[in-house]
Each structure stands twice: as structure tokens, then as C-alpha cells.
Image (cartoon, rainbow, N blue to C red; front, side):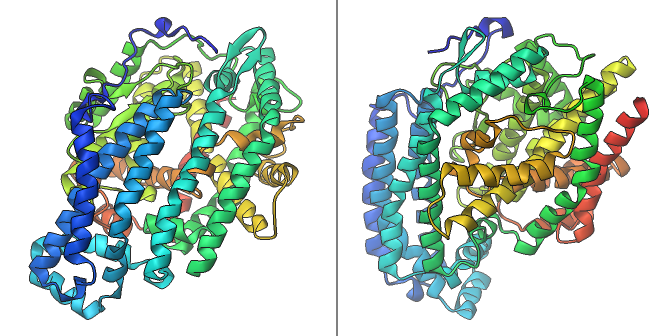
Length: 594
């Protein structure tokens, strides 16, 4: 197993999960497991077959009981999942998470009737109930979200069957996670996990980057049959469910969950693809020249510039940089972020068996979010901290909405995270003391934006092609490799050559397994934040209050309603061009510096 020296970064915080439960054996956890089963059984006994006969007050009480059950479920799953992510190679943790998931699935099967019966209510009847009770009317967005699935709803028996079958999909996800966590890479004599080898892609030593790139390809190739099986099985499972439901496309379910119209996502995708030449193609040609190369290889994509400062960023410096940037925007934002550092809400160190990547998990509204990082002292890690803390602040504010209304659609879930990055970037840019420092900061920001917008839309196109191709039969690893390369060349541009083995790099991307079609949310969020930030720069008066109102809304409002106070409309095709023009303008400035 690889060993990491985290002491060079300072005292890195670790999670204290006791705000959820003190341990898997905690009496409170055992009591919640029992209460969940009895609460679900009682809920079904009281309401199954009776929703149509409830008056406004009765329906309100029904919804609130459902919300209390959601709190128990969220707390149980959050504790089990977070504990597992800390050490995915621990068999006992994996078993505990699986057992909790199965218990939750078994218990909540009794609740499947709720959405099915709700969707059978006549529109006029439900509208009348909502008009009679303001407390009930608060839940209108929840009813709208559930009823959006009406055209795709199956029989009660089939819906219960699919609900129970969910644990099988969870098992495939766990197989992917455990496979990734168990991978071991040897680069120039050093043994590393996935996070460590990916970190070498930003190493100033080109031979080190190349060695890491080739080792990643070599190791992924040893697992390719298993990882292709995971993707094939999940894509087929989704295709079967979509076909039975009559979904118009593999992406349709994600769009419904995100409360975003397919044409808005298509407009975003088309705008980004059309902009490839003036964004990624143009930037990477600049980078090729800066690095003095005839062609860029995949291990040069995130290479530092020759004039870049390669010092390690101490954790205390990362903390102060982000909190000061947040406070510069509004002191309330820094106050909301500060407890994450002091109360065990962040797990920052890279450790053997720990899940790769970074996230902020909202847990439940009567607790608090937990942020996971794999901090390696890079400037990009500071931006990742700013990103995930943005999520955390958003989740804390949205918790005021309660368990059912706090969850933000993915298209808006990236707003606060990307905005937090932008605030941190602007603070660092303003502090630049030389043209070289400014150039490095701008180049790094452009690369981050390309990774967020261009790369994620290429990922989205890859997923669309994989799910479409899977309808025609089993995909071999070579089939998936070919689809991956078809989008990579188009998105990265002519400055690149692709080494043998790069075609397997799709295999380590967790979003494809855990959240199909999630990835366009990153591009959506980046474009939205670029437009928001332009509004902030043009008319800062009162912006902070409107911004906090947007975050507090959680999932209680549609994106049109949330963006209207800023004079923005994501359904306007020109909206995306405005966001992309900010990236293009930064590339203009970089070109002018040469």
C-alpha cells in the first residue's frame, strides 16, 4: 500500500462523524434503524390508498411525516457512506454500508405508493388543496418534481420491484469504488494510489508526468474488462428502465431530476462545442508554444508553466486564502465557512484506501455538511478547497428549507462552488505582483475553466454515445475506448498527440458510474457563474443579498425564477455565449502577454 507524508502540508483536519453517530454500534443508530422500519410501516398503514381522500391539513401532515422519515434515511446513509469513503478497502466498512443500504431499501419499499398515488391526483384537486393551506403550498415544488415523472410512471407493483432492485446498482458502484481504491501504481520507484498518480500530471518534471501517464494506462488496462463490465451492466440496466418507462432519451431522467429543459442543456452543449476552436484549441496551442514542444502529449495538458512557482501551499495558507476571499465578498460567507475547519467537517489528507477526488456531502438538514479533499499542497488544491467550501456554504444556507426542499438540482448545485472558486481566483489575481505571476494565475484559471466546461461537455458527449451504442449490444473495452477517443480529439484540438493507452482513461472517471450525465452540471454551473460574476462587477449594489437569497432557496425554486433577480435567463441561447466569452477574454489577455 502506498504511504503518504502529509506532514509537509501542516496539520490537516479529519472528519469527526460523531455529529451523525458515535459509531456503527451506537444505540442511537440502532434505534434509528428500528424507528425507520416502524415509521415506514405506520406511514403505509395510515395513508396507502387514502391520499385522494385527504384534506389540505391531512396532506400536509402526510408530507411532513414523509419528511421526518427522509431525515432518518439521510442520517443513516450519510454516516455509512462517509465512513466507507474514509477507507474503502476495509471489508467491515463496506459490509456496514451495504447492510444499511439494504435496510433502508427494504424499509422504504412501503413508501413507494406515496409518489404513485400523488401522481394519480387530479391537477385541479391538488391545486385546490394547495390554495387552502399556505404551509402545504410551501411544498409545491416537491409535488411538481414528483409529478414531472407522471408520464413515465409504471404500475405500483413494478415501481416497488425497481425500488428493491436498487441495491443491485449500488453493488456495481461499490465494485467500481473498491477497484479504484485498490489500484497500486509504481512511478520511478514510488508506490502510489490513484490520487497520487493523478497528482503527478501537474509535476514540473516532464519525465515524471510521462511516467505517471503511462503507468496509469498500464494499470487501468489490467482492470479494463471489469470496468467495462460495470459500465455495460449499468448502461443496460438504465436502458431497460428507460424503455419500460418510455423515457425519450437516456439523458431525460437526469434533466427531469435537474428541473432543466432538454433544449437548455442542448443549447449549452452546442455553444460549448462550437466554442472549442476559440477556447481549448486556441489555449492549448499557446501552451504548446510556452512549453517549447512540437506537440502536446496527454501528460502536458495540466503541466505547470515553466515560470510557475512550484512551492507547496501549506494548509494554513490555503485556509486563510479562501476565507479572506470569501470575507472580501461578504463577511457572512467566511463566517459560514469557518466551522468546517474547526469542527471536524473536513477530511483533507490523502490516505491509503481513501476514496479519490473531492466532494461536499450535505448529510441532513439538522446536522451539517462534510467536505472531503485529497490535499497535496498544489495551487489547484486551494481552488478545490474553495470549490467544496462553496458547496458547503450553499448546503448550510439551503438547510433552512427543510429536508425535502433543501436539495438543489445539479444545474444550480455547482453555482456556489464555482462562485467560491472565482472569488478566490480574483483575490489571488489582484495580489499578483509581477506580470509573470498574473500570467500563471490566468493560465491556471483558463485551464480550470476548460476542464470544467470543455472537458465536462466532452464527457457528456462520451456518455451520450456510450448509452446510445449500448442499445445495440454489449460494448467491448475497445468499443468504449474508440468512443472516448472520438470526443477527446475534437475537444482538445490539433495541438495534441495521444499516446497509446490514453484510450482507457474513461475507466477511472467516477461520475459515469455514480451519476450518469451529471457532468454537464459543471459546465452549466461555470457558465452561470461567469454570467453572475459579470452582473456583480457591473452592479455590485445589493448583489450579496440577492446571491444569499439564491443559495437559501435550495430546491424550492426553478432556475428561471432564481436567476430573474439578476436579469439572467439560462433558456436564452445567448446566455451561454456570454459565459464562454469570459474564458475567451482571458485567453485574449494571455495572447497579448506573449
